[in-house]
Image (cartoon, rainbow, N blue to C red; front, side, top):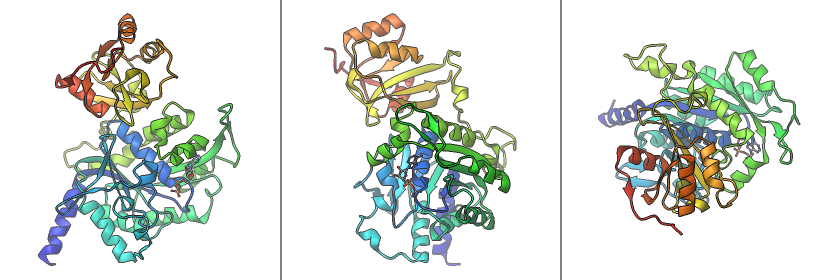
Length: 415
Ligand code: ADP
């Protein structure tokens, strides 16, 4: 073997060693919401404090950039390495759509060329240390899922996305056979567009029959990760190029995503490959050091803190009263961030936000600026307020605050 090839292999191995687990998201057919699930899954994992990457290996029709509002943006290049785009400060994204323009995508990519590009997407990308890399594949079981599955090896599993109508079809069975032939464990099946959430009354109606995903999972002895209803807000957020989970974190549908993510982070089976690879890990140790939603419910423990940071487009915003969303960040008694969610505030009305945040159990608000009336109201509720905070991502702001390194300037809106 040539020394060049050896170097390449060593480089690839080095990258793979730093990725704890790869989730390969597959579907038998297009249009079942595979990319939507992949993107929201990655975001949910990152909001739970996991270092997460999204790799879009759909070379002909990448949809991840659009779903994340990154259309027209480009990844960086430094020497031989591609620098992923970082979103919300914590999630790294690479897609063919962030490398070349739409017209260039019409180029014919034959199998070996695709395999070589996909290899570069792992080997030549500055992913750094990742807990989870979520890979969005084109539909079916063609060159792209094959290349990525062969490349990432043991610390990987597949997530199969289907809809109730397609559940029992040959396409889904093909996905299962594909994984079995490649000895790629299946983390589970997700039934998307399962039932319909009425936009008027919020009630869920079964338009197509649902539950088939669960039956299929049982028949093939595969975990069933959960179902996500057909929800018009998912289409709306997709069209607005805003991730659903980020915009609608308090809805029933978001709760379904959360339940699925709970199952994923707490599955010993999924993270087993990782513990097997690490010789000094105990085989039945906790799957990964990430809290499930329920773990985070018991507020008020010793040193537990819940912070609220007003944000605009995911970053600290100067105007407390007119922010787009609040990042609600929980820390444990060692000051580690255990959870981050974004919540949309109620419509602006004097005095409402302090009560709303206090009812959510927030102990400390870190803002760029805040009017004196709001500060008084927070004081009455026993909520600490820090104004004049400088920084970008809410998670960093909270971490810096806890370390005592947060830059504090003037209160930017003390009218
Ligand atoms: P795929 O990757 O399988 O081709 P996409 O994720 O691109 O599918 O989704 C196809 C379309 O379906 C998009 O318009 C998306 O917004 C919409 N969609 C996905 N999941 C849902 C859902 N649960 N409810 C409503 N629309 C959805």
